[in-house]
Length: 349
Ligand code: NAP
Ligand code: F7E
Image (cartoon, rainbow, N blue to C red; front, side, top):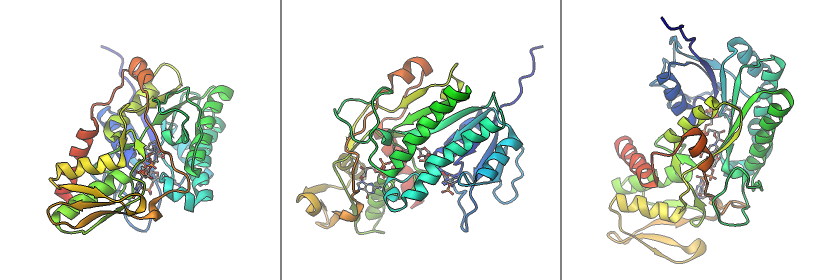
């Protein structure tokens, strides 16, 4: 008889978020015991994981929830000490770029120092075997010199306190790896979306807005910069990459992307087309409008409040290192992603 293998345990900070929920599903399928860390909030914040555990009684034997907050070093250390996990996924962040212009100090506290607090806990507790995953971001590239695909060697030039904070957390992971030998890896993930995406991120806002317009529940969709270019993948694919990154033989930094570029405007056009809305664009800049050719109504408008003081104009990622060494590649393309988001929205709105 072969030796019984011990079940792995993982802590997920950011369990209630888009990525936390997909990662939890994946790890449960892989027979992990999961400890999720959730913030106390006055209204429910477990909508994305309610199908995975009993959010009132917390009775599951595979999935435990701890109240905690990465702004609080004591609770962070205490949870890590209690669980002493095989793997820690730090997905917790103030993750909205536009919001980081309004709450820069808070964003730095959570998104930058939060990561440091977890790494410090691993160091202080001498958890030599615990592996750490840092949710790094393509926002770290920020202002890019050439519109080529970006890779692990491309320099960072962040354009928001969110991006600056992610650069700090990235280097903190590298530093703890080099100074203390901690298995700390960065996944530099490009934008990834899903039906579970927060409603103020542009893809979800577009899908939700156009579906509601189609159903007659909403009159207009108001957006900012239509010409930003993003590399949009599906969060389900990206959750797989996180796990693979921690299974690799050594800690390292990895770009995860689809290597395809789409403007915000093209995304709008694709969603409109799939919903059979005939959209015609007129005007320029803040006066640009999308008109429904059937009703002649203006259904897409621009409002400068959605523009950022500094924008990241172009993001496209070269994931060849992950493809070669992790055997990871995306399954969903942009059209599949849009299909998935629309069908879920049509069902639920
Ligand atoms: P998300 O949906 O905004 O989830 C963020 C998670 O962090 C939520 O569970 C949130 O809890 C939690 N959180 C926020 N502040 C916290 C605090 N002080 N203490 C503990 N938890 C806290 O983000 P996501 O899209 O899943 O992204 C996951 C991670 O990847 C984030 O770090 C994000 O910055 C990074 N990232 C995302 C993308 C992307 O395109 N999605 C790309 C690159 C990197 P509540 O539910 O209570 O708010
Ligand atoms: O914006 C433009 C906006 O907020 C995408 C986060 O997950 O990915 C995400 O950050 C683009 C930007 O995502 C609206 O100006 C136009 O150019 O959906 P977003 P993001 O800023 O790229 C990175 C990789 C992360 O790490 C972050 O955590 O769309 N845009 N009009 C708009 N954006 C929003 N939100 N709302 C608009 O109305």
